[in-house]
Image 1 (tube, rainbow, N blue to C red):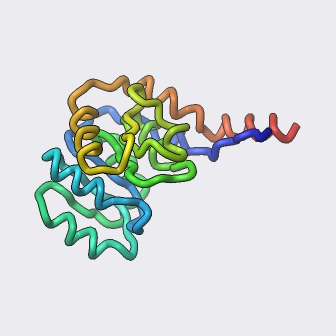
Image 2 (cartoon, rainbow, N blue to C red):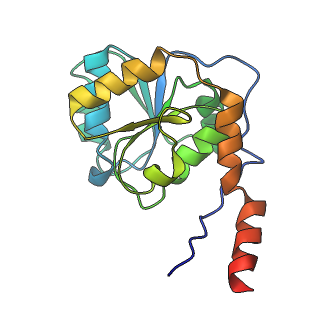
Length: 183
C-alpha cells in the first residue's frame, strides 16, 4: 500500500483572468524529444487552429522548421512567469502531448480556469477529468489530437469548475496531505 501526495502548484498565483479566452491553443514545455511537440504541431496544422509554444531547449530549431510546414504555429521562447500566466488565461486550451509522471503545466492551466488536452497516459489521467476539466486523447496520432482540438474548441467550459478541481493541488492541500501521511 502506498499513499500519494501530489506535488503542490501555486494556485494563489495561477488564477483566472477577467478577459474571455481567445482562440489560440498553448503549450508550455521544455523543447525536448519526449514531450512529443511535433504531434501537437501537426494536429494544429491539421485542425486549422493557432498554437503558441512557450519554452526553449535543444529541439527548438527542429521544431521551428517543423512548425513552418503550415500556418498558425509560433514558438515564443522563454517567457517570464507573469507572461506565462497571461498566456494560460487567454488560451483556448493548454496541451500536453507527451507522457509525464505528474505534469505541473496541466494543473497550472486548470488553476487559471482553462481546459487541458492531454495524452491519456501517466499523470494526466490523475490531474485531468475527461469531459470536465479537459480531454484525454487516447493515442498520440495526429488524427486523434486534431479531433480533440476541434472538440475542445467547439464547446463551452466551466472555468469555475476547472479552477475548483485545480485547488486539489494547492500548497495548503499539499501540506495537509503530507502532514496526514507523516502523522
